[in-house]
Image 1 (cartoon, protein in one colour):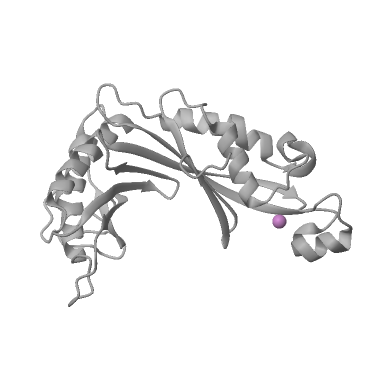
Image 2 (image 1 turned 90 degrees about the vertical axis):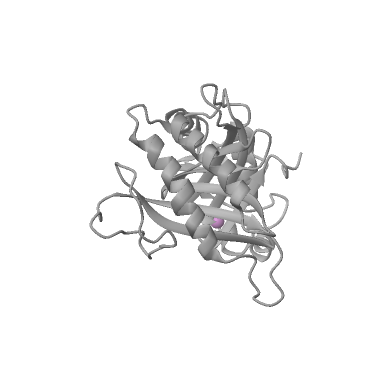
Length: 269
Ligand code: NI
């Protein structure tokens, strides 16, 4: 059983003691400092629910680790003049190592994640050394038609419903890219956010945005542009494009209800 606890908190300019380390307010606010930078910390553990309580662990223990270990390490790195994604990642890795030792009894730590904005998050997962993952979200708008060329319009309508409209139709696609690297300083191997942004824009957004996927994107000339195939095509377009990190995962939402995910472990050849 996997349990994730999200702690909503703040990153102030100075290390601040929190009166109640279990504090996890709805909006992460603290008294007197309501304009500090909002952040979320997610701790994920594996374990079996206790037969009596039904808990994998007491979530207050995870809140306490988030506030007293993760937030403090992040704030300490955030205070330095040389704060960068690399120093933040290194602080998160240090926090991960401490949290791993203090993980509630009977559980195994799976990840410590820092959500920096609705579009960017950093995570550390177990490994030797621990694996650092950076996830960034992007979007594009495009039209497509789902159809099998050898079938009639009515047969395609039967198979693909409204998505087989011969004139096509549009979606606002949202997709997340996760790259994996090492957090260690000074030789951390994580691609920086600017480079990630540039590479994804160049190889995916510029190629797909405001395009007809069937007719203007060569991969779909004889491949149905389903959300599954779009995820696989984005993965193959980006694989090997990051100098220092490895492409770990691509997730694409065609609508808020429908998404497909490809990881380097489940990629079909
Ligand atoms: Ni569609």
